Length: 238
Image (tube, rainbow, N blue to C red; front, side):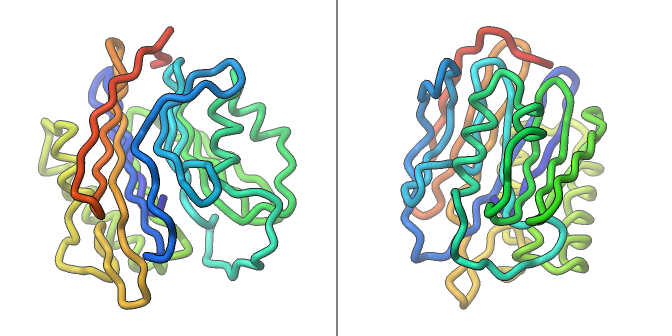
């Protein structure tokens, strides 16, 4: 939930996320399909709060969470609801953007949500105000969590990403997973982190979304396991 990239390849979209957490946090469950309300949703479940940082629903909507909004913040430890549960509230709706517009986020910790729902949307909640920013889905994008990375580091990581996409014109999903699974010679600020403070990259999750199928790949770095979960969809929104 601390690094997210979006790469379009024709009618195929690759959305990939690294989850960085403290080693004291319980490990997540492998991706599984659940029905929430009337919507089928595929996601890896966080055992601490029961939410998730990455989910795709049966109509091809993808939601990915990053901690923090624009700048780092000090958690107050007294929030009304986990941000991972907010992700499930949004992704299980037939109109995710309207849910974000109407949802009361008071007493919710700041976060960023990357939402792909026929268009690409960046949503940020800074603890006081909501920010909606439509993005060009024909372009590559990358996000780094403001709670873990300073502005100069975020810019450096973006440079690594844009160099990768520029050098690899025929990018395949595995290429992106490999890029996200590389520390780039920096365990403090690379894409795979292992800091002395106990912060560590737990996993890399990817959705490959195209007209024919949805496929989620989940690389569990702590247990050295890889899961590939195809997901049947009623109608992919591309």
